[in-house]
Length: 394
Ligand code: ADP
Ligand code: MG
Image 1 (cartoon, rainbow, N blue to C red):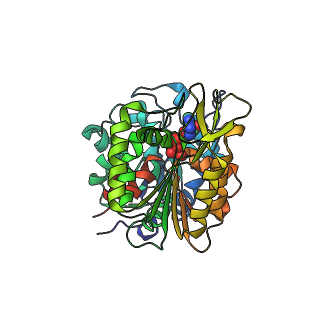
Image 2 (image 1 turned 90 degrees about the vertical axis):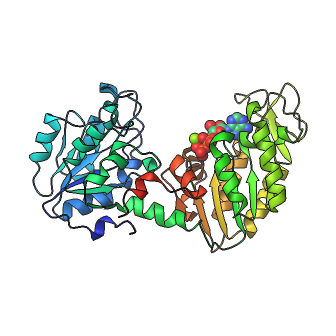
Image 3 (image 1 turned 45 degrees about the vertical axis):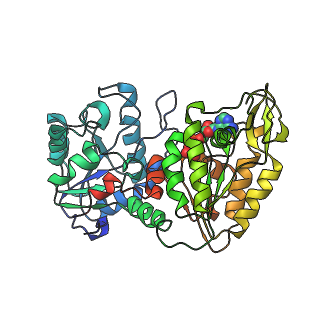
């Protein structure tokens, strides 16, 4: 059966365990530097409080590698949350154990507790049975609102779920699943995918799955360098994943057979390195030996913009260049703006850097859906079943 949402679950007086994604960036002083992820889960948490639940929140934060490390404590998150909710948030001093048990048992209806960083124990990422059972002991109801971790089978996303019979998606998870599903199955055409960024290997599964579904795939960023190199272009000092050239060649051959249009950059902005104050435009087949390709050039921007102007469904992941450096941001910002102009269609952006670029371009409100999950959104669009979502079905 399809997963329920939290709105369909009886929460009154129950211990409602909510797996959230509070993996927020921290300031050097240990404060929350960007609270977007916390704010995204507030509707789910507030709903549970208003329904009289005893709310138990749990998340990972950073990479403490399976042992307690104070710099990755949930303390700053708990403080931010208490402020945002206008009520006490009790922090357990461990993810599971007698201290955590006491904090959960002491909760009143409408009260909120948060467990210490789940990755303070190796059992979380190992999806360990004992740790899963320990977490399940705090839950009468299980809710998963951590879309960004839904592609991982961990104790808090999969292992514990089988021990809790009442379960469902939080509002954030539900919205992600609904919106990303719009790109699976029947879509308004043309369906265009823009794939850039850095890692070919991370995204090759996605690219191959798009061959059966998209009308055009535009490649940019360092990703495109590898494909250009695979086609015989000289790429100078550009970032190229040399070990992935055979994969890139095989993909281009498959694409040709499938009839899906693959657009590679026609021109590139090159410089000595990303610290350069300006770049020069060269043909995409001839990057000088002492230069690196750092952005797509004006002809390529015009071509991608033209394709986007006709598109009805668009998925974008990965910037077109080193957009963090102003001289090499034009391609990425142009794509963001062209995406915002797509009329009456569905536009979806996934991936941390691409989402940052959409905000930088000031067009976030014109995009149909901005996913909170990087890897999770890629796997979802690829058509894979995310373990964290599958666990919620019954
Ligand atoms: P996302 O987070 O949106 O999934 P990725 O993490 O795959 O995107 O890629 C983003 C990174 O790729 C950025 O740090 C950007 O600077 C880098 N990048 C893009 N184009 C190039 C390029 N031509 N050369 C080197 N790095 C690039
Ligand atoms: Mg990234």
